[in-house]
Length: 260
Image 1 (cartoon, one colour):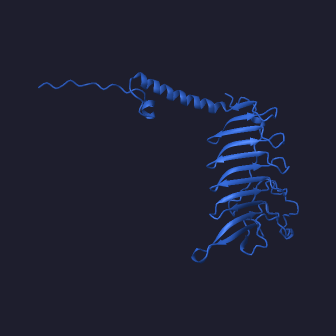
Image 2 (tube, helix red, strand yellow):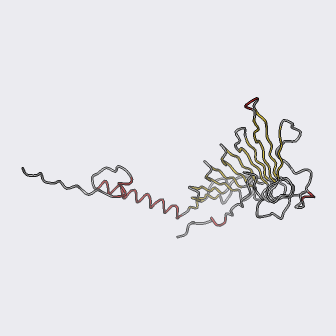
């Protein structure tokens, strides 16, 4: 049985990028030999301006920490802290972290945090061309929305939406007009159906569905319906799914009363 009616293979998947979740990243395995404009893989030639996006310069109220991650001969991880509170409640809070993942002297991933230490925003230069091509927003510390520029024009053409950290929907712009023309719907991490706007008028012209997922759902529904019918035919109410799956209960035989 074919898993798709049509069209799914034509949609290319988007390559992953290295997130700024911690200080132990060594950089993407793809494009590690590429450096951003002005950058160099020779640490002695690293530029003075590393294209920082943490907005910390000329702000004495902020504290900055520079560390070298695995494989780095010079610091490639920057953390920016803000001191909040007074007296016993005085503490440092991480508000920004940025990393040079491919060790060319140019920062390519930056993550912004709120006062609770939760991530709220991230930007990344996935292909190391010196331009941001990934934008991420977080809600309660979890990824909620991700936008990607897969064409290199500086504008997002893929929009991903998450609920409780799970991918729910993807919108894609294939003709670079800034409007989605492919809509993907996910369930339990699997692509359930995909709508395609072939004539780019803003309306779905066809829906392609995962036939296997549809078949499994139909079989589960049929099984539950058959169990309910069996219970109904036996004249007993369905109390729960376990009893329904077991089918009708066997009538209990009455024992004759003992003679005195």
